[in-house]
Length: 336
Length: 279
Image 1 (tube, rainbow over the protein chains, first blue to last red):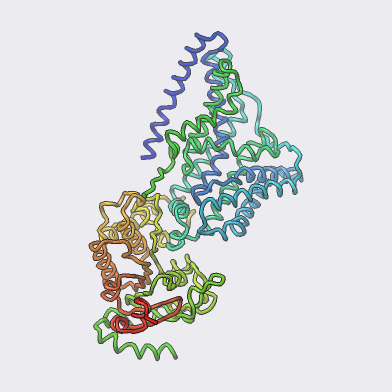
Image 2: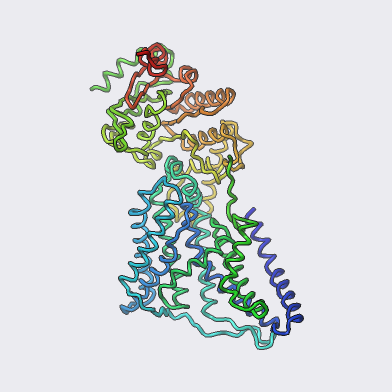
Protein backbone atom coordinates (compact mmCIF):
# COMPACT_ATOMS: atom_id res chain seq x y z
CA UNK A 1 0.00 0.00 0.00
CA UNK A 2 2.70 2.58 0.85
CA UNK A 3 4.48 1.63 -2.40
CA UNK A 4 1.34 2.42 -4.33
CA UNK A 5 0.96 5.72 -2.56
CA UNK A 6 4.57 6.59 -3.34
CA UNK A 7 3.99 5.74 -7.01
CA UNK A 8 0.96 8.02 -7.11
CA UNK A 9 3.04 10.80 -5.64
CA UNK A 10 5.76 10.37 -8.22
CA UNK A 11 3.19 10.54 -11.01
CA UNK A 12 1.49 13.55 -9.45
CA UNK A 13 4.66 15.62 -9.16
CA UNK A 14 5.03 16.67 -12.84
CA UNK A 15 1.35 17.53 -12.94
CA UNK A 16 1.58 19.70 -9.84
CA UNK A 17 4.69 21.45 -11.17
CA UNK A 18 3.05 22.11 -14.53
CA UNK A 19 -0.11 23.32 -12.80
CA UNK A 20 1.83 25.72 -10.60
CA UNK A 21 3.65 27.02 -13.66
CA UNK A 22 0.38 27.72 -15.42
CA UNK A 23 -1.00 29.52 -12.36
CA UNK A 24 2.04 31.75 -12.13
CA UNK A 25 1.93 32.36 -15.85
CA UNK A 26 -1.63 33.58 -15.39
CA UNK A 27 -0.62 35.69 -12.38
CA UNK A 28 2.18 37.25 -14.39
CA UNK A 29 -0.42 38.30 -16.92
CA UNK A 30 -2.41 40.04 -14.18
CA UNK A 31 0.51 41.60 -12.26
CA UNK A 32 3.09 43.29 -14.46
CA UNK A 33 5.54 43.34 -11.51
CA UNK A 34 5.82 39.55 -11.74
CA UNK A 35 8.47 38.24 -14.09
CA UNK A 36 7.67 34.83 -15.53
CA UNK A 37 9.33 32.63 -18.07
CA UNK A 38 9.19 28.85 -18.06
CA UNK A 39 12.99 28.67 -17.89
CA UNK A 40 13.03 30.88 -14.80
CA UNK A 41 10.21 28.86 -13.23
CA UNK A 42 12.02 25.54 -13.69
CA UNK A 43 15.21 27.06 -12.37
CA UNK A 44 13.49 28.13 -9.16
CA UNK A 45 11.75 24.78 -8.91
CA UNK A 46 14.92 22.71 -9.34
CA UNK A 47 16.90 24.97 -7.03
CA UNK A 48 14.17 24.52 -4.42
CA UNK A 49 14.06 20.74 -4.82
CA UNK A 50 17.81 20.50 -4.34
CA UNK A 51 17.57 22.72 -1.28
CA UNK A 52 14.82 20.40 -0.08
CA UNK A 53 17.14 17.39 -0.25
CA UNK A 54 19.42 19.26 2.13
CA UNK A 55 16.51 19.65 4.56
CA UNK A 56 15.76 15.97 4.17
CA UNK A 57 19.31 15.09 5.19
CA UNK A 58 18.69 16.68 8.57
CA UNK A 59 15.14 15.34 8.84
CA UNK A 60 16.40 11.78 8.30
CA UNK A 61 18.29 11.89 11.58
CA UNK A 62 15.09 12.79 13.42
CA UNK A 63 13.14 10.02 11.72
CA UNK A 64 15.69 7.40 12.76
CA UNK A 65 15.51 8.25 16.44
CA UNK A 66 11.75 8.65 16.33
CA UNK A 67 11.33 5.23 14.75
CA UNK A 68 13.37 3.62 17.48
CA UNK A 69 12.14 5.38 20.56
CA UNK A 70 9.05 7.36 19.69
CA UNK A 71 10.70 10.57 20.82
CA UNK A 72 11.51 13.76 19.00
CA UNK A 73 15.26 14.03 19.33
CA UNK A 74 15.92 17.65 20.15
CA UNK A 75 19.66 16.97 20.02
CA UNK A 76 19.80 16.09 16.32
CA UNK A 77 20.89 19.62 15.40
CA UNK A 78 23.73 19.58 17.87
CA UNK A 79 24.79 16.17 16.56
CA UNK A 80 25.08 17.80 13.11
CA UNK A 81 27.12 20.67 14.55
CA UNK A 82 29.29 18.40 16.65
CA UNK A 83 30.03 16.09 13.72
CA UNK A 84 30.91 18.99 11.42
CA UNK A 85 33.09 20.66 14.06
CA UNK A 86 34.94 17.43 14.75
CA UNK A 87 35.57 16.78 11.09
CA UNK A 88 36.81 20.33 10.43
CA UNK A 89 39.01 20.02 13.50
CA UNK A 90 40.73 16.95 12.13
CA UNK A 91 41.08 18.50 8.68
CA UNK A 92 42.79 21.46 10.33
CA UNK A 93 45.27 19.03 11.85
CA UNK A 94 46.25 18.34 8.26
CA UNK A 95 44.42 15.05 7.71
CA UNK A 96 42.87 14.18 4.38
CA UNK A 97 39.10 14.70 4.52
CA UNK A 98 38.32 11.02 3.98
CA UNK A 99 40.51 10.09 6.95
CA UNK A 100 38.97 12.89 8.99
CA UNK A 101 35.49 11.64 8.10
CA UNK A 102 36.41 8.09 9.10
CA UNK A 103 37.68 9.26 12.48
CA UNK A 104 34.56 11.38 12.93
CA UNK A 105 32.36 8.37 12.21
CA UNK A 106 34.20 6.48 14.94
CA UNK A 107 33.72 9.40 17.32
CA UNK A 108 30.01 9.67 16.48
CA UNK A 109 29.59 5.97 17.28
CA UNK A 110 31.39 6.53 20.58
CA UNK A 111 29.08 9.48 21.30
CA UNK A 112 26.05 7.29 20.50
CA UNK A 113 27.21 4.55 22.85
CA UNK A 114 27.89 7.13 25.55
CA UNK A 115 24.42 8.63 25.13
CA UNK A 116 22.85 5.19 25.40
CA UNK A 117 24.92 4.31 28.45
CA UNK A 118 24.66 7.54 30.40
CA UNK A 119 21.35 9.08 29.36
CA UNK A 120 19.00 6.50 27.87
CA UNK A 121 19.69 3.37 29.88
CA UNK A 122 18.38 4.78 33.15
CA UNK A 123 15.29 6.00 31.25
CA UNK A 124 13.95 2.65 30.03
CA UNK A 125 10.18 2.45 30.53
CA UNK A 126 9.84 6.19 31.09
CA UNK A 127 7.28 8.24 29.24
CA UNK A 128 8.35 9.74 25.89
CA UNK A 129 8.18 13.27 27.30
CA UNK A 130 10.91 12.39 29.82
CA UNK A 131 13.15 11.04 27.09
CA UNK A 132 12.43 14.17 25.08
CA UNK A 133 13.58 16.34 28.00
CA UNK A 134 16.72 14.24 28.18
CA UNK A 135 17.47 15.01 24.53
CA UNK A 136 17.22 18.73 25.31
CA UNK A 137 19.96 18.11 27.84
CA UNK A 138 22.02 16.28 25.23
CA UNK A 139 21.52 19.21 22.85
CA UNK A 140 23.02 21.75 25.25
CA UNK A 141 25.78 19.42 26.34
CA UNK A 142 26.96 18.55 22.82
CA UNK A 143 26.56 22.14 21.72
CA UNK A 144 28.85 23.39 24.48
CA UNK A 145 31.18 20.42 24.43
CA UNK A 146 31.86 20.70 20.69
CA UNK A 147 32.68 24.39 20.91
CA UNK A 148 34.74 23.85 24.05
CA UNK A 149 37.00 21.44 22.20
CA UNK A 150 37.07 22.92 18.73
CA UNK A 151 36.40 26.61 19.41
CA UNK A 152 33.46 28.74 18.37
CA UNK A 153 34.98 30.44 15.31
CA UNK A 154 33.28 30.09 11.97
CA UNK A 155 35.23 27.48 10.05
CA UNK A 156 35.30 26.67 6.39
CA UNK A 157 34.68 23.07 5.44
CA UNK A 158 35.89 22.38 1.92
CA UNK A 159 36.23 18.80 0.81
CA UNK A 160 36.58 19.61 -2.86
CA UNK A 161 32.95 19.58 -3.96
CA UNK A 162 32.71 21.91 -6.97
CA UNK A 163 30.64 25.01 -6.29
CA UNK A 164 30.50 26.57 -9.74
CA UNK A 165 27.09 27.01 -11.34
CA UNK A 166 26.22 24.98 -14.41
CA UNK A 167 23.91 25.84 -17.26
CA UNK A 168 21.55 23.24 -18.67
CA UNK A 169 19.13 23.04 -21.60
CA UNK A 170 20.33 26.26 -23.15
CA UNK A 171 18.75 25.15 -26.43
CA UNK A 172 15.27 24.82 -24.89
CA UNK A 173 15.01 27.86 -22.66
CA UNK A 174 16.43 31.27 -23.28
CA UNK A 175 19.58 31.60 -21.17
CA UNK A 176 19.31 28.00 -20.01
CA UNK A 177 18.66 26.74 -16.48
CA UNK A 178 21.28 27.59 -13.91
CA UNK A 179 21.99 24.97 -11.24
CA UNK A 180 24.63 25.06 -8.52
CA UNK A 181 26.80 21.96 -8.82
CA UNK A 182 27.28 21.80 -5.03
CA UNK A 183 23.52 21.38 -4.66
CA UNK A 184 23.55 18.59 -7.21
CA UNK A 185 26.29 16.72 -5.36
CA UNK A 186 24.38 17.17 -2.10
CA UNK A 187 21.23 15.81 -3.71
CA UNK A 188 23.10 12.78 -5.03
CA UNK A 189 24.57 12.10 -1.59
CA UNK A 190 21.13 12.44 -0.05
CA UNK A 191 19.66 9.97 -2.53
CA UNK A 192 22.39 7.39 -1.84
CA UNK A 193 21.94 7.80 1.91
CA UNK A 194 18.21 7.25 1.69
CA UNK A 195 18.65 4.17 -0.47
CA UNK A 196 21.13 2.66 2.00
CA UNK A 197 18.94 3.43 5.01
CA UNK A 198 15.83 2.12 3.31
CA UNK A 199 17.54 -1.22 2.64
CA UNK A 200 18.94 -1.32 6.15
CA UNK A 201 15.58 -0.77 7.81
CA UNK A 202 13.20 -2.50 5.45
CA UNK A 203 15.12 -5.52 4.25
CA UNK A 204 16.52 -6.52 7.61
CA UNK A 205 14.71 -7.64 10.71
CA UNK A 206 16.00 -4.54 12.47
CA UNK A 207 13.05 -2.64 11.03
CA UNK A 208 10.50 -4.70 12.91
CA UNK A 209 12.59 -4.64 16.08
CA UNK A 210 12.79 -0.85 15.83
CA UNK A 211 9.06 -0.43 15.57
CA UNK A 212 8.64 -2.78 18.49
CA UNK A 213 11.03 -0.80 20.66
CA UNK A 214 9.30 2.46 19.74
CA UNK A 215 5.92 1.03 20.69
CA UNK A 216 6.59 -0.52 24.08
CA UNK A 217 9.89 -0.93 25.89
CA UNK A 218 8.72 -3.57 28.31
CA UNK A 219 7.08 -5.72 25.69
CA UNK A 220 10.13 -5.41 23.45
CA UNK A 221 12.36 -6.62 26.26
CA UNK A 222 10.06 -9.52 26.99
CA UNK A 223 10.33 -10.90 23.45
CA UNK A 224 14.10 -10.63 23.72
CA UNK A 225 14.91 -7.49 21.78
CA UNK A 226 18.15 -6.13 23.22
CA UNK A 227 16.95 -2.58 23.78
CA UNK A 228 20.41 -1.23 24.58
CA UNK A 229 21.99 -2.61 21.43
CA UNK A 230 19.15 -1.31 19.27
CA UNK A 231 19.44 2.16 20.79
CA UNK A 232 23.20 2.24 20.37
CA UNK A 233 22.86 1.19 16.71
CA UNK A 234 20.17 3.73 15.97
CA UNK A 235 22.00 6.61 17.63
CA UNK A 236 25.17 5.62 15.78
CA UNK A 237 23.34 5.67 12.47
CA UNK A 238 21.75 8.99 13.40
CA UNK A 239 25.23 10.28 14.24
CA UNK A 240 26.56 9.20 10.84
CA UNK A 241 23.59 10.79 9.08
CA UNK A 242 24.31 13.92 11.13
CA UNK A 243 27.90 13.86 9.87
CA UNK A 244 26.73 13.70 6.24
CA UNK A 245 24.29 16.54 6.88
CA UNK A 246 27.05 18.44 8.67
CA UNK A 247 29.44 18.05 5.74
CA UNK A 248 26.83 19.26 3.27
CA UNK A 249 25.44 22.15 5.31
CA UNK A 250 28.85 23.05 6.68
CA UNK A 251 30.21 23.17 3.15
CA UNK A 252 27.40 25.48 2.13
CA UNK A 253 27.18 27.83 5.12
CA UNK A 254 30.45 27.30 6.97
CA UNK A 255 30.71 25.38 10.22
CA UNK A 256 29.30 27.53 12.99
CA UNK A 257 26.81 27.54 15.83
CA UNK A 258 23.80 28.28 13.64
CA UNK A 259 24.26 24.86 12.04
CA UNK A 260 22.54 23.42 15.10
CA UNK A 261 19.51 25.58 14.41
CA UNK A 262 19.10 24.28 10.87
CA UNK A 263 17.64 21.24 12.52
CA UNK A 264 14.51 23.18 13.27
CA UNK A 265 13.96 23.76 9.60
CA UNK A 266 13.58 19.99 9.47
CA UNK A 267 10.54 20.21 11.72
CA UNK A 268 8.03 21.20 9.02
CA UNK A 269 9.63 18.59 6.78
CA UNK A 270 8.85 15.96 9.39
CA UNK A 271 5.29 17.15 9.88
CA UNK A 272 4.71 16.92 6.15
CA UNK A 273 6.40 13.59 5.60
CA UNK A 274 5.45 11.88 8.83
CA UNK A 275 7.78 11.31 11.75
CA UNK A 276 8.17 7.59 11.12
CA UNK A 277 8.84 7.46 7.40
CA UNK A 278 12.22 7.63 5.67
CA UNK A 279 10.70 8.24 2.21
CA UNK A 280 8.42 10.74 3.96
CA UNK A 281 11.44 12.75 5.08
CA UNK A 282 12.59 12.98 1.46
CA UNK A 283 9.21 13.84 -0.04
CA UNK A 284 8.55 16.34 2.75
CA UNK A 285 11.94 17.97 2.15
CA UNK A 286 11.30 18.25 -1.58
CA UNK A 287 7.87 19.80 -1.09
CA UNK A 288 9.11 22.29 1.49
CA UNK A 289 12.23 23.19 -0.52
CA UNK A 290 10.45 23.64 -3.82
CA UNK A 291 7.41 25.25 -2.21
CA UNK A 292 9.30 27.97 -0.37
CA UNK A 293 11.59 28.71 -3.29
CA UNK A 294 8.77 29.05 -5.80
CA UNK A 295 6.65 31.03 -3.34
CA UNK A 296 9.54 33.40 -2.69
CA UNK A 297 10.26 34.01 -6.35
CA UNK A 298 6.74 34.24 -7.70
CA UNK A 299 4.55 35.31 -4.80
CA UNK A 300 7.25 37.46 -3.18
CA UNK A 301 6.88 40.42 -5.55
CA UNK A 302 3.11 40.42 -5.02
CA UNK A 303 2.79 40.10 -1.23
CA UNK A 304 6.15 41.57 -0.30
CA UNK A 305 9.01 39.11 0.09
CA UNK A 306 10.67 37.16 2.95
CA UNK A 307 8.24 34.31 2.32
CA UNK A 308 11.05 31.78 2.68
CA UNK A 309 11.24 32.45 6.42
CA UNK A 310 7.71 31.39 7.25
CA UNK A 311 6.35 29.47 4.28
CA UNK A 312 7.54 26.06 5.51
CA UNK A 313 5.95 26.51 8.93
CA UNK A 314 2.68 27.69 7.48
CA UNK A 315 2.56 24.70 5.17
CA UNK A 316 3.22 22.44 8.16
CA UNK A 317 0.38 24.05 10.07
CA UNK A 318 -2.05 23.46 7.24
CA UNK A 319 -0.91 19.85 7.19
CA UNK A 320 -1.47 19.46 10.91
CA UNK A 321 -5.06 20.51 10.39
CA UNK A 322 -5.84 17.99 7.70
CA UNK A 323 -3.35 15.16 8.05
CA UNK A 324 -1.67 15.19 11.47
CA UNK A 325 0.21 11.94 10.87
CA UNK A 326 1.93 13.37 7.78
CA UNK A 327 1.92 11.94 4.28
CA UNK A 328 3.54 8.61 5.08
CA UNK A 329 3.39 8.43 8.85
CA UNK A 330 1.61 5.75 10.84
CA UNK A 331 -1.91 6.66 11.77
CA UNK A 332 -2.32 6.87 15.51
CA UNK A 333 -5.37 5.11 16.84
CA UNK A 334 -6.36 5.31 20.44
CA UNK A 335 -9.00 3.00 21.81
CA UNK A 336 -10.72 4.58 24.74
CA UNK B 1 21.36 -32.80 48.13
CA UNK B 2 18.51 -30.62 49.28
CA UNK B 3 16.98 -30.70 45.79
CA UNK B 4 16.83 -34.48 45.56
CA UNK B 5 15.24 -34.76 48.98
CA UNK B 6 12.39 -32.43 48.17
CA UNK B 7 11.87 -34.13 44.82
CA UNK B 8 11.49 -37.51 46.45
CA UNK B 9 8.92 -36.06 48.80
CA UNK B 10 6.72 -34.59 46.13
CA UNK B 11 6.71 -37.31 43.49
CA UNK B 12 4.14 -39.31 45.42
CA UNK B 13 1.23 -36.85 45.52
CA UNK B 14 1.84 -35.71 41.94
CA UNK B 15 1.44 -39.20 40.51
CA UNK B 16 -1.54 -39.79 42.74
CA UNK B 17 -3.37 -36.86 41.18
CA UNK B 18 -2.81 -38.31 37.73
CA UNK B 19 -0.50 -35.59 36.45
CA UNK B 20 2.61 -37.74 36.48
CA UNK B 21 2.74 -38.21 32.72
CA UNK B 22 2.74 -34.48 32.07
CA UNK B 23 4.62 -33.10 35.04
CA UNK B 24 8.16 -34.34 35.53
CA UNK B 25 9.87 -34.16 38.85
CA UNK B 26 12.64 -32.07 37.36
CA UNK B 27 12.74 -28.49 38.63
CA UNK B 28 12.83 -25.99 35.76
CA UNK B 29 13.08 -22.85 37.81
CA UNK B 30 13.46 -22.15 41.46
CA UNK B 31 13.68 -18.94 43.41
CA UNK B 32 15.30 -19.00 46.80
CA UNK B 33 14.99 -16.43 49.56
CA UNK B 34 14.11 -13.64 47.17
CA UNK B 35 13.78 -10.20 48.74
CA UNK B 36 12.95 -7.11 46.74
CA UNK B 37 12.47 -3.60 48.04
CA UNK B 38 11.86 -0.26 46.39
CA UNK B 39 13.46 2.17 48.77
CA UNK B 40 11.62 1.57 52.03
CA UNK B 41 8.76 -0.39 50.48
CA UNK B 42 9.22 -4.13 50.74
CA UNK B 43 7.62 -5.78 47.74
CA UNK B 44 8.85 -9.31 48.35
CA UNK B 45 10.50 -10.66 51.46
CA UNK B 46 12.28 -13.97 51.63
CA UNK B 47 10.15 -15.97 49.19
CA UNK B 48 11.21 -19.37 47.88
CA UNK B 49 9.40 -21.79 45.60
CA UNK B 50 10.05 -23.86 42.54
CA UNK B 51 8.41 -24.59 39.23
CA UNK B 52 8.66 -28.11 37.83
CA UNK B 53 9.01 -28.94 34.19
CA UNK B 54 5.62 -29.33 32.51
CA UNK B 55 3.41 -28.14 35.34
CA UNK B 56 0.93 -25.31 35.58
CA UNK B 57 1.93 -23.33 38.61
CA UNK B 58 -0.41 -20.66 39.92
CA UNK B 59 0.72 -17.70 41.98
CA UNK B 60 -2.17 -16.20 43.91
CA UNK B 61 -2.65 -13.65 46.64
CA UNK B 62 -4.60 -10.48 47.48
CA UNK B 63 -3.83 -7.24 45.66
CA UNK B 64 -0.37 -5.89 46.42
CA UNK B 65 0.92 -9.27 47.54
CA UNK B 66 3.95 -9.05 45.23
CA UNK B 67 2.80 -11.48 42.56
CA UNK B 68 3.64 -9.34 39.56
CA UNK B 69 6.89 -8.28 41.20
CA UNK B 70 7.75 -11.94 41.46
CA UNK B 71 7.20 -12.47 37.73
CA UNK B 72 9.28 -9.35 37.06
CA UNK B 73 12.07 -10.85 39.12
CA UNK B 74 11.85 -14.13 37.19
CA UNK B 75 12.18 -12.51 33.79
CA UNK B 76 14.66 -9.88 34.88
CA UNK B 77 12.71 -6.61 34.90
CA UNK B 78 13.43 -6.30 38.61
CA UNK B 79 16.68 -7.23 40.27
CA UNK B 80 16.16 -8.57 43.78
CA UNK B 81 18.44 -7.35 46.57
CA UNK B 82 18.70 -10.82 48.06
CA UNK B 83 18.25 -14.38 46.97
CA UNK B 84 19.10 -16.45 43.93
CA UNK B 85 17.23 -17.67 40.88
CA UNK B 86 18.06 -21.05 39.41
CA UNK B 87 16.88 -21.60 35.88
CA UNK B 88 17.72 -24.79 33.99
CA UNK B 89 20.36 -25.61 36.55
CA UNK B 90 22.09 -22.26 36.28
CA UNK B 91 22.06 -20.16 39.43
CA UNK B 92 22.15 -16.38 39.24
CA UNK B 93 21.51 -13.41 41.49
CA UNK B 94 19.38 -11.77 38.82
CA UNK B 95 18.02 -12.33 35.33
CA UNK B 96 18.17 -9.95 32.39
CA UNK B 97 15.08 -9.54 30.21
CA UNK B 98 16.54 -10.24 26.80
CA UNK B 99 18.71 -13.05 28.07
CA UNK B 100 15.73 -14.59 29.81
CA UNK B 101 13.87 -14.40 26.51
CA UNK B 102 16.78 -16.05 24.75
CA UNK B 103 16.75 -18.91 27.24
CA UNK B 104 13.08 -19.60 26.71
CA UNK B 105 11.15 -17.48 29.18
CA UNK B 106 8.20 -15.69 27.58
CA UNK B 107 5.55 -13.65 29.31
CA UNK B 108 2.38 -11.64 29.03
CA UNK B 109 1.49 -8.58 31.02
CA UNK B 110 -1.27 -7.61 33.41
CA UNK B 111 -2.13 -4.50 31.41
CA UNK B 112 -1.45 -5.80 27.91
CA UNK B 113 1.91 -4.64 26.52
CA UNK B 114 1.50 -5.04 22.79
CA UNK B 115 3.00 -3.06 19.94
CA UNK B 116 -0.16 -1.08 19.35
CA UNK B 117 0.81 0.43 16.03
CA UNK B 118 1.48 -2.96 14.44
CA UNK B 119 -0.86 -5.59 13.09
CA UNK B 120 -1.62 -8.80 14.93
CA UNK B 121 0.65 -10.72 12.58
CA UNK B 122 3.55 -8.29 13.00
CA UNK B 123 3.16 -8.47 16.76
CA UNK B 124 3.38 -12.23 16.68
CA UNK B 125 6.32 -12.08 14.28
CA UNK B 126 8.29 -10.02 16.82
CA UNK B 127 8.18 -13.15 18.94
CA UNK B 128 10.24 -14.85 16.22
CA UNK B 129 12.98 -12.21 16.17
CA UNK B 130 15.25 -14.24 18.37
CA UNK B 131 14.79 -17.33 16.24
CA UNK B 132 15.94 -15.56 13.10
CA UNK B 133 19.54 -15.77 12.02
CA UNK B 134 21.36 -13.03 13.79
CA UNK B 135 23.65 -11.68 11.11
CA UNK B 136 22.05 -8.45 10.02
CA UNK B 137 24.53 -7.67 7.25
CA UNK B 138 24.07 -11.09 5.73
CA UNK B 139 20.35 -10.52 5.72
CA UNK B 140 20.77 -7.26 3.89
CA UNK B 141 23.04 -8.81 1.25
CA UNK B 142 21.46 -12.21 0.60
CA UNK B 143 17.95 -11.42 -0.03
CA UNK B 144 16.93 -14.91 -1.24
CA UNK B 145 17.67 -16.90 1.95
CA UNK B 146 16.39 -14.03 4.05
CA UNK B 147 13.06 -14.16 2.28
CA UNK B 148 12.87 -17.94 2.71
CA UNK B 149 13.56 -17.55 6.40
CA UNK B 150 10.82 -14.94 6.70
CA UNK B 151 8.36 -17.33 5.02
CA UNK B 152 9.31 -20.16 7.41
CA UNK B 153 8.68 -17.94 10.42
CA UNK B 154 5.49 -16.65 8.91
CA UNK B 155 4.25 -20.25 8.57
CA UNK B 156 5.03 -20.88 12.21
CA UNK B 157 3.09 -17.78 13.22
CA UNK B 158 0.15 -18.84 11.06
CA UNK B 159 0.01 -22.11 13.00
CA UNK B 160 -0.19 -20.17 16.25
CA UNK B 161 -2.87 -17.94 14.76
CA UNK B 162 -4.89 -21.04 13.86
CA UNK B 163 -4.29 -22.53 17.27
CA UNK B 164 -5.59 -19.45 19.08
CA UNK B 165 -8.38 -18.89 16.57
CA UNK B 166 -7.47 -15.32 15.67
CA UNK B 167 -7.35 -15.75 11.87
CA UNK B 168 -9.85 -12.98 11.25
CA UNK B 169 -7.80 -10.27 12.99
CA UNK B 170 -4.50 -11.21 11.36
CA UNK B 171 -4.09 -7.87 9.59
CA UNK B 172 -5.84 -5.67 12.15
CA UNK B 173 -3.87 -3.13 14.10
CA UNK B 174 -3.91 -4.40 17.67
CA UNK B 175 -4.72 -0.97 19.11
CA UNK B 176 -8.17 -1.37 17.58
CA UNK B 177 -8.95 -4.77 19.06
CA UNK B 178 -11.16 -5.35 22.08
CA UNK B 179 -9.39 -6.15 25.31
CA UNK B 180 -10.06 -9.89 25.32
CA UNK B 181 -8.57 -10.30 21.87
CA UNK B 182 -5.55 -8.17 22.77
CA UNK B 183 -4.83 -10.59 25.59
CA UNK B 184 -5.05 -13.43 23.13
CA UNK B 185 -2.63 -11.72 20.72
CA UNK B 186 -0.25 -11.21 23.60
CA UNK B 187 -0.40 -14.93 24.35
CA UNK B 188 0.21 -15.63 20.66
CA UNK B 189 3.32 -13.45 20.67
CA UNK B 190 4.64 -15.25 23.73
CA UNK B 191 3.94 -18.62 22.10
CA UNK B 192 5.80 -17.55 18.95
CA UNK B 193 8.93 -17.54 21.07
CA UNK B 194 8.51 -21.30 21.59
CA UNK B 195 9.04 -20.77 25.31
CA UNK B 196 9.92 -23.44 27.82
CA UNK B 197 8.53 -21.33 30.62
CA UNK B 198 5.52 -19.15 30.00
CA UNK B 199 4.68 -16.48 32.55
CA UNK B 200 1.08 -15.29 32.38
CA UNK B 201 0.14 -12.24 34.42
CA UNK B 202 -3.64 -12.33 34.95
CA UNK B 203 -4.45 -13.79 31.53
CA UNK B 204 -8.19 -13.76 32.25
CA UNK B 205 -8.57 -10.38 33.92
CA UNK B 206 -11.37 -8.25 32.52
CA UNK B 207 -12.81 -11.04 30.41
CA UNK B 208 -16.34 -12.31 30.23
CA UNK B 209 -17.18 -15.91 31.09
CA UNK B 210 -16.98 -17.10 27.51
CA UNK B 211 -13.60 -15.47 26.91
CA UNK B 212 -12.35 -16.89 30.20
CA UNK B 213 -13.37 -20.38 29.17
CA UNK B 214 -11.57 -19.95 25.85
CA UNK B 215 -8.46 -18.71 27.58
CA UNK B 216 -8.50 -21.62 30.04
CA UNK B 217 -8.74 -24.02 27.15
CA UNK B 218 -5.78 -22.35 25.42
CA UNK B 219 -3.65 -22.45 28.54
CA UNK B 220 -4.40 -26.13 29.08
CA UNK B 221 -3.81 -26.92 25.40
CA UNK B 222 -0.48 -25.11 25.34
CA UNK B 223 0.61 -27.02 28.40
CA UNK B 224 -0.65 -30.29 27.00
CA UNK B 225 0.39 -30.10 23.36
CA UNK B 226 3.70 -28.23 23.57
CA UNK B 227 4.67 -29.36 27.05
CA UNK B 228 5.22 -25.73 28.01
CA UNK B 229 5.67 -25.05 31.68
CA UNK B 230 3.31 -22.29 32.78
CA UNK B 231 3.37 -19.97 35.75
CA UNK B 232 0.26 -17.86 36.02
CA UNK B 233 -1.11 -15.18 38.26
CA UNK B 234 -4.87 -15.21 38.46
CA UNK B 235 -7.58 -13.86 40.72
CA UNK B 236 -10.40 -16.11 39.59
CA UNK B 237 -10.20 -18.91 42.15
CA UNK B 238 -12.41 -21.21 40.12
CA UNK B 239 -9.94 -21.02 37.26
CA UNK B 240 -6.91 -21.40 39.48
CA UNK B 241 -8.22 -24.45 41.30
CA UNK B 242 -9.35 -26.07 38.04
CA UNK B 243 -6.28 -25.78 35.90
CA UNK B 244 -3.23 -25.58 38.12
CA UNK B 245 -1.13 -28.43 39.42
CA UNK B 246 0.31 -26.54 42.35
CA UNK B 247 -0.41 -23.15 43.87
CA UNK B 248 1.80 -20.76 45.78
CA UNK B 249 0.11 -18.08 47.89
CA UNK B 250 1.73 -14.73 48.58
CA UNK B 251 0.50 -12.10 51.01
CA UNK B 252 2.17 -8.78 51.80
CA UNK B 253 5.28 -9.93 49.98
CA UNK B 254 5.73 -13.10 51.99
CA UNK B 255 4.91 -16.71 51.15
CA UNK B 256 1.81 -17.88 52.95
CA UNK B 257 1.30 -21.37 51.59
CA UNK B 258 2.41 -23.71 48.85
CA UNK B 259 0.73 -26.90 47.71
CA UNK B 260 -1.88 -28.59 45.55
CA UNK B 261 -5.18 -26.80 44.93
CA UNK B 262 -6.91 -29.03 47.47
CA UNK B 263 -4.39 -28.23 50.18
CA UNK B 264 -4.67 -24.51 49.47
CA UNK B 265 -8.46 -24.58 49.47
CA UNK B 266 -8.48 -25.91 52.99
CA UNK B 267 -5.63 -23.82 54.36
CA UNK B 268 -6.96 -21.63 57.18
CA UNK B 269 -4.26 -18.98 56.76
CA UNK B 270 -5.10 -18.54 53.07
CA UNK B 271 -8.80 -18.24 53.84
CA UNK B 272 -8.00 -15.62 56.47
CA UNK B 273 -5.82 -13.63 54.09
CA UNK B 274 -8.55 -13.49 51.49
CA UNK B 275 -11.58 -13.03 53.70
CA UNK B 276 -9.98 -11.26 56.62
CA UNK B 277 -10.30 -12.38 60.25
CA UNK B 278 -12.30 -11.00 63.11
CA UNK B 279 -10.05 -9.65 65.82
